[in-house]
Length: 353
Ligand code: F6P
Image 1: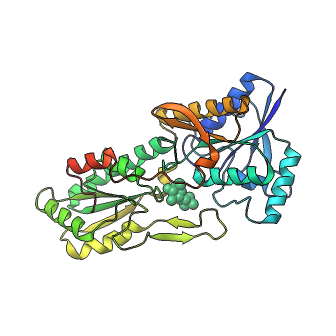
Image 2: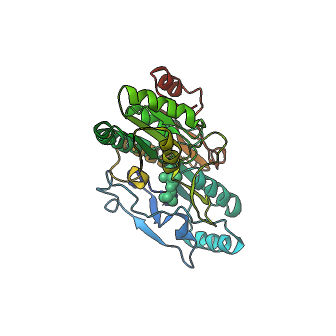
Image 3: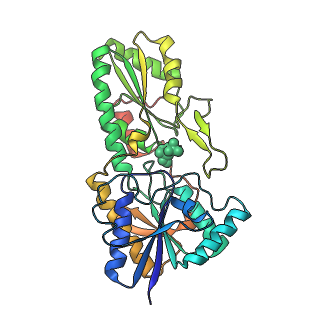
C-alpha cells in the first residue's frame, strides 16, 4: 500500500533542518511506494484558503545536506489551533491533501501543536526534535545545538582579543530561551570566566567580586550568559511580546542589563555583545549533519512501521522514540547539580550565585 507523507519544519530555523528533510525524503523514496509532500512555512502552509505544498523528489532534496535554514520555510508564530475558524480551515486542507502522516520537525512548541492537531483532527504525526536550545524533554541532544555551540564558542574566543587588549569585562549573551545549555557548553568551550544560566539566579555582588579579583591579576573577564539569565529577585528580560504566537515571549537584552549593574562597581570598562541569530545560521557541523540524518532516517522508519504519534529521540547516544504527548510544551532545563555545572565550579568558573 502506498503512503502519502507530509513534511514540515516549525518554529525557529536551525542548522540541520535540510539534512532531516533530505534524509526523510530519500529514505521514503528509496523504500518505494511513498509520495513526499513538503508543506511550506510550517503550520502556516496549512492555514490559508488552500494548502501551500510542493512535491519533494530525489532531485529537490539533493545538494542540501550542508545548507543552513530550511528549503520549506518555517514560522514560529503560526498557530493552527488559534481558534475554531483556523482549525476548520486546517482540517479542510488536511482532507484535501489526504496525507497518511506528517513528519513534523520542531521544538517543544511545535510538538505541542502537532499533538493538539492530532487530537483535534485525527491527523497522524511523527516528530523530529530540533532546536539550538537543546531543551526538548527526553532528548539528550537535538540537532542544531552542536553548531550553535561552535558558533558561540568562536565568538567568545574572538571577543577575548578585545577583552585582553583593552582590559575590559566583556559580556556575551547567547540564545537558549529558558534553558542554559547553550550558555553552559559554549561558556566552557570558550573558556568564559563567568557563566550565567537561567537556572541559577545571579548575585551582582558575587560577579563584581570575581571581576575585581581578575582586574588585579588577568586584567580582563569574559562573561557568557544565557538570554534567560536573571538577577536574584528579578524576572527575565523580555525583548518583545508577539501576541497570538504559540510562544509570545521573546527574550533578549539581559547582557545590557548586566552591564549597567556591573559598571558602577568596576574600574574596567564593561561591554556587551548579543550574539542573536548568528547562532542559528550557517552550515551545520559534521556532528549535526550526521545526527540530523540519523533522526530523519529513523523518522522515515517510524512512518513505514506506522508508529505514529511518536518523536525520534536520542538517549545515551542511541536512537529511540517517545510519545509526542510526553514532550509537548515541556522544557529540559539544566540542573544546578549537573556534572558540567559542578565541573565548571571546580575549575574556578563563577556561576554567579
Ligand atoms: O528556540 C530557538 C531560539 O533561537 C531561542 O534561543 C530564542 O529565544 C528564540 O528562538 C528567538 O526567536 P526569534 O527568531 O523569533 O527571535
